[in-house]
Structures are given as C-alpha cells and as structure tokens.
Image 1 (cartoon, helix red, strand yellow):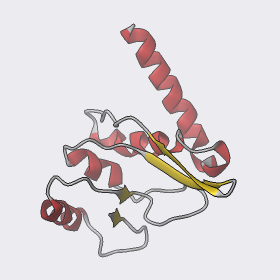
Image 2 (cartoon, rainbow, N blue to C red; image 1 turned 30 degrees about the vertical axis):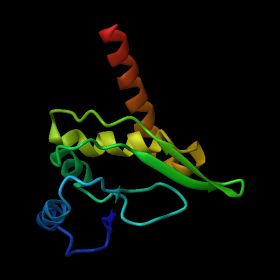
Image 3 (tube, rainbow, N blue to C red; image 1 turned 90 degrees about the vertical axis):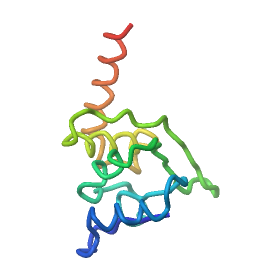
Image 4 (tube, helix red, strand yellow; image 1 turned 120 degrees about the vertical axis):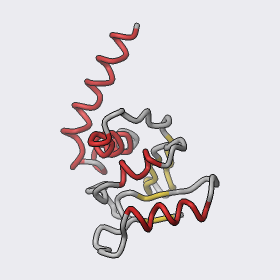
Length: 126
C-alpha cells in the first residue's frame, strides 16, 4: 500500500518509480489523494500520470463508512487516454463516480463532464 501525501515535498515521481520497481508486478493499493478524509477532495498532482505510466491495470476503488458498515465499490479498470495531461482528469471522476454525491461534492462538475463524455463515446461506438 502506498499513500501519496499532498504535503510531502520529498515525494517525487522518481521515488515512486523506485518504489514500484521494488514491489514488481504485485498488486498495489495507491491512495492518490494522499490521506484519508471524510470527503473525496484534491489528488496529489501527477498521480494519474504516474499510475498510467506503470502499465498495469488501475481500478478505482471507493471506501466509506455508512450505516454502521464499510461500503466498498470497485470500478472498471481505467482506460487511459493517449494524452498524459488528461490522466488526472480521468482518475478523479473515476473514483468520485463510485462515491455517494455528498462525499464527492468537489468532483461533481468534473463528474458531470466525465459522464457526458463517456455517454457520447458509448453512443458513437454503437
């Protein structure tokens, strides 16, 4: 498991790549937002690019406490865009889409655009 803290200036892409090289192709759990919070907020800049560069499947997961139980939702693997500058734009909404609206308020605008783009892509491929 790896957290990518937002306030850790020592965390770098080079250190993350070295970590990934050490663990090999084992499954890894990465928290791109850096720390647990009650609501899904900002992600560590570059986390989407880093995950896409690993060349292994990336599945978004949402975990939250509700009605006295942990709720867990696992999404489909992210199909990364060829444009690396869009990887954060893909990762955040993919996670937010799995959460109740009240836990992902900061992502609702991006999530609306993300859903519309996916609807358009599925219609054009049909």
